[in-house]
Structures are given as C-alpha cells and as structure tokens.
Image 1 (cartoon, one colour):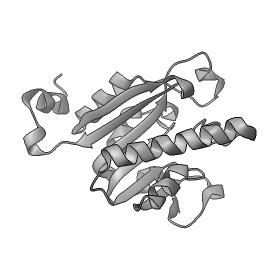
Image 2: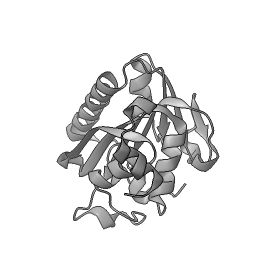
Image 3: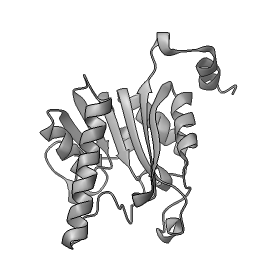
Image 4: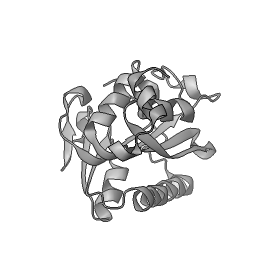
Length: 193
C-alpha cells in the first residue's frame, strides 16, 4: 500500500471549520449506511486511518473492521497489514481517497470486489487544480470510470455523484446477482464492451 500524504476526509483540522467538516462527513456516512446498506451486518474500512467511517458504522450497529498499512492506526478491530494479503468477505467495503494513489486502479477495484459480499462505497479525488499537490497522486478518477470498472467486476451502480466541497466523486456499487445480469453487463464483464 503506498504511503498517503493527505486525505481531506480523514484529517481533522482544528477550529470550528474542522469540527464542521467532521460533523458533515459523519452525517454523510450515516446517510450512506442507512440508504444503501440495509440488511448488511459487516463493514470493512480499507485504509481506515483514524477510522471515522468505521466508528460511525459501529455506532449504527454494524460489525465494523478496518485495515491500514500504517502502524499508528493500530486499534481494536483494525488489521495492520498489506491490502493484497487480506482475505475474508464483508457485506460493505468502504474506501476513501485511495484509488487515485494506485498505479493499478483496476487491480484495486478487483480487490474491493473480492472482499465484498454486497456493497462497495468508493470516495475518490477527481482532477482539480490541487490534485497534483499531493506527491503520490498518480491518476485522477471520474465517476464514469469507477462505475465502469465496478460493472466490469460484477457490480451495478446505485449512486454516483460529485461532491465539489471535497473535490471528490462518490460511487456506491452493489454486487449483481444472476437475475440482475443483462446481456450488456455480461459483455462488459467479459471485456468485450
């Protein structure tokens, strides 16, 4: 996992602005969980950092786990290990501001798909004036690209929006069942689209 230099969703700044951002982010997480994760029991927060999403999910009654490569975030229910070595399945897999750091974005999406039984929530930075101010940003993402990559790995889109306040795209994808598979989805999954 590459070292991350900044993550506007996880870094709490001081003062009233930081508290307001923290509050808004927390309310947004609650909305995502209530709206798209009904019937789900387990949550994995990939590159969880201080674990705001994980904590919010726990408070809402989910069994929440985190994974991070940074020893500073060692805590209860947080695995300190390489993402590529993680095994297991979770109802919801969440990742925030990670995809744009990955050289192999499709491989990352494939790993999220392997870990998820049902829902994947991805929040990623899109191209803005500040995008390359973070030294390890490799490629900006678009909501269309993220949707297409998840569709290629057997998921369908539930939500894809731009969040200008954080210069981010949010994509919520659900694993398709056999009855959800149409001819177009099957072609995309096989790579003929």
